[in-house]
View 1: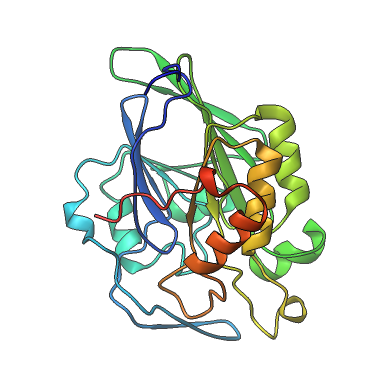
View 2: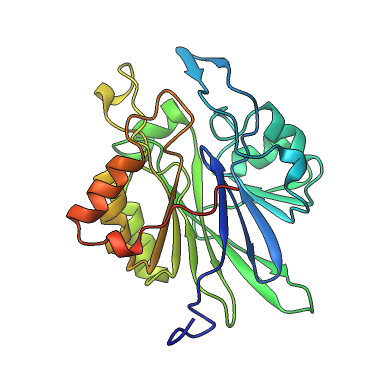
Length: 262
């Protein structure tokens, strides 16, 4: 990649539908929010979630996974039954403190700004930092009792690009806090889709809508944005075309990528 240092160089990201993506970083293979069930309905408190499309590959075709970055464990559109089964074969799952208690010994919870060092092949290390996320509009004390605790992640390492994985976050204020500590970001995996429920928060999105996703990219100074969490579920109200339109309107279309779907 001419004119781009190794530190800032892009790396392949495979996206499989919903919030699930796979990338290799520092020699380790990371998977976000695993959802590999076939299309079906899930009964959840207060209603139903409907998965409308399968993942683009089965979980059995993933190969080795070193770390799962799990924004939260409480909703099936972020961790479904197949995803839970997959965790048993993964050495480490990073998630919320509450999720780690529920998932058991292979899971580690990261509070806001808490970091963990992971050993890379060859003995060097990289750092994963838990960053704040909020699964709905409003203040934490108003949102978390309704939709639960969520965490995002920032990955850093010597000679490596800075990577931000937002998780199910609806707060641009928290994006700003992350940008103040870690920006500019080389690759941002931004959860989008504007999921809405009439019975929650007066129908406001509980994850970023498309315009907010573009604004998050601007705030982060992101060199590349790969959106996830905008398809394959009935409660996502904005999709690929909305993202393209929003990034075009923001003058950021050159930063938007949709990843490898294979």
